[in-house]
Image (cartoon, rainbow, N blue to C red):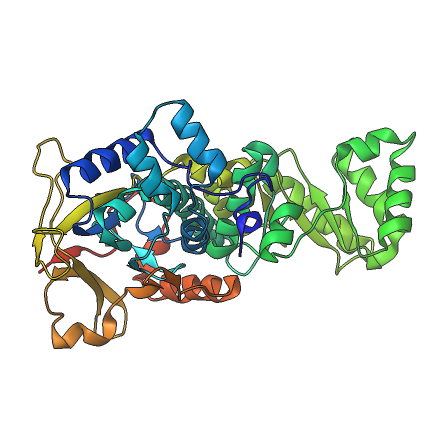
Amino acid sequence: MGVADLGLPVDVPSTALFTDQYELTMLEAALAAGTAGRRSVFEVFTRRLPEGRRYGVVAGTGRVLDAVENFRFDADVLGFLREREIVDEPTLEWLSSYRFGGDVWGYPEGEVYFPGSPILRVEGSFAECVLLETVILSILNHDSAIAAAASRMSSAAGDRPLIEMGARRTHELAAVAASRAAYVGGFTSTSDLAAGFRYNIPTVGTSAHAFTLLHDRERDAFQAQVNSLGRGTTLLVDTYDVAEAVRTAVEIAGPELGAVRIDSGDLLLVAHRVRQQLDELGATRTKIVVTSDLDEYAIASLAAAPVDAYGVGTQLVTGSGHPTCSMVYKLVARAESADPGAPLVSVAKRSTGGKTSIGGRKWAARRLDEYGVAEAEVIGTGNVPARLADRQLQVELIKAGQVVGREPLDAVRDRHTAARAGLPISATQLSRGEAVIPTEHV
């Protein structure tokens, strides 16, 4: 995959400026001090889940791999840095040949995570690793937040499909990433064609209220749509009078009408009335799709309604109240010197205020109970206990600078379904609570 797969404009040659200035000023100082070459270990984790959430969802890993591959300082980027005098000439020279040559391990995309989970581990020289902090966090924080919201909505929807339709509620490039993350979290399709093009996500869409308003009569609009898209199309029935629209829709398309969409009103009440009317008109196989500012709570409230699919926009692309996961990228170990054979020593932030971290290169495993259900996230340093050896969570993603962990998006989606199914049943409760399993440091 290349730049286009990231959802970037084609004239953006690299991801190198998707960073904060202090990454480069730290690099300059470390080069001058002779410490830039020290082997270092950075880890991505979150100290806590968003309030009330029971689990997190790892999403965006595939985009991180693309971003690392495209992290290059070309002539235009170097010229910008030189013009602004952001770093000195020796640093610019070093950046001109930058290629990440280290290793990256992490939770496979689609897996669930908990407070303290070492979601990603980046190893290499301090210089090459520190530059990646911002771009990695921006991707993982955004995509994991969307995927977590999508997962909750998918759980609430049960077997009913979910359509992602939030492109108009967020930045145009974020919309593409949100569609991808939603698909990881359990959505089945998207209205965003850029997401369909870049990630091969199924796309759907028929018409909006504007199409009905364009025509002199609602009947004319329905007839035009059926003529163009066939009887299996979805007709929007709440522009004027819903009952009259349903009657007209079936009259024009017949019992083969694919679906009707309801976008306003008391969705529970209207859905029951529309279902009864459709059945009475002989359109017993016509489905009902509901939209209108849905979130996981609204979806759950419609569980008993005769609804066949949900379309979700604003609440999904904003993380349903939690648009970030508060992940951080922290140095947890570094070599005593720049000598390639120098041993690693653990380092950690010790300040007060809830921002302390735990040093050392970490492994992670999920302990299961006698029924095969997760009961604890176990994190440690050093050797992995034999009893947990086959339950380790981290996989190799980049080896010596080469991506080795790229995988199809459908495999990621399936992994999330399986990971969520392996949690205690209380994980799917929408009521606020703590993480569904504890994190144990050993």
